[in-house]
Length: 201
Length: 201
Image (cartoon, rainbow over all chains, first blue to last red; front, side, top):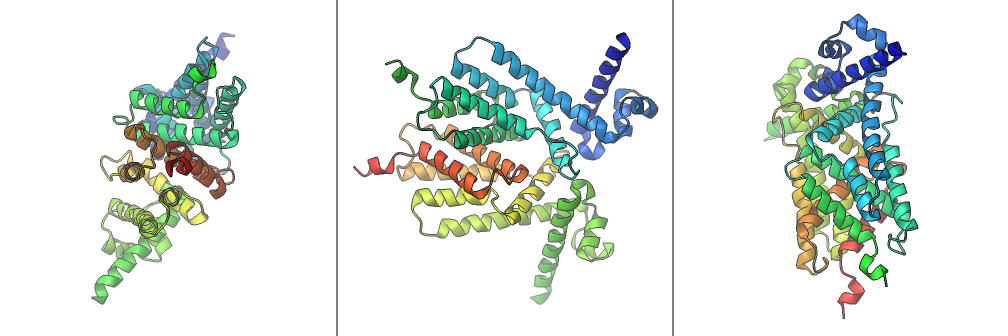
């Protein structure tokens, strides 16, 4: 089905143009007209793929989410020591390079924007929360989580830590760089996990 | 100087109208025209107090910051056990009621907006970071912080936790309510501080 493939490819091309427009001009500038121009398409051609601005924005944001999810799944499939695996998954959620900071920025601008649109789009914060809750459960199942930990509260705490780091990586990438983010997350994992050297006894 | 007082009072009145407009329509809707209408003033009268939209926005945001700072200073002046004092200060940074959630929302919308304006306004994130670094130093000075703690990393970790909680309190106030926020912060303070019962030995 070459036509279908072309169609999806073109939609992705438009989504990427949308990200660039949001990064340059903010959501205020993300009009269908500006996006069409950035994508090198006529307004009519763009409307062929997305009939409304909201439809286009929702699609563009879904793509960001898919990129992050794909990266996380790749790490999850790797054969790594558990704590290291958790660290690397969390390092995919917090942006640590120019590309992922840009993704986060687009995501963020959209999330704030969507708050003034009734139920336009579930910003998918819940999915990150669930993913982090799963990581806590995983650490618990393999007996790495401290014995008397309150999983509910530890999930909420790790989720807040990760989103806070993501926010600061975006606002102040010079201070909150990859090395620093890694040290903070490692310190946190250390503090919620049992001492592995003691565990082997 | 009654005239000067009136002037400041009027500026505050306009700032409050600005907050309401941002909450209702987002930054997209925060035009001088809409704000004047919300404040019940003519465009000319508003221009008498603020000659540009940016000047008005910066003033409106400064007022939000002043409100938070005033609340924190009030708690700092209270005579409370150290850990409790730290907890209550942190609970002022994370919004836990309808009013402070609204403040946070205005602040946040502005912060995202200001990113596309060159050096319009230092969003003041650094001030919260410094305040939190000071809390860590304070805990250390009174020998409550764990002995081998890396203060640099613990400051960054607490800052991320607090801003993450603030973000989630704003996005999902039902789950991330005051009780839950308090439990998360208490758990965190517990984990970075020495066991006080052990300390008295």
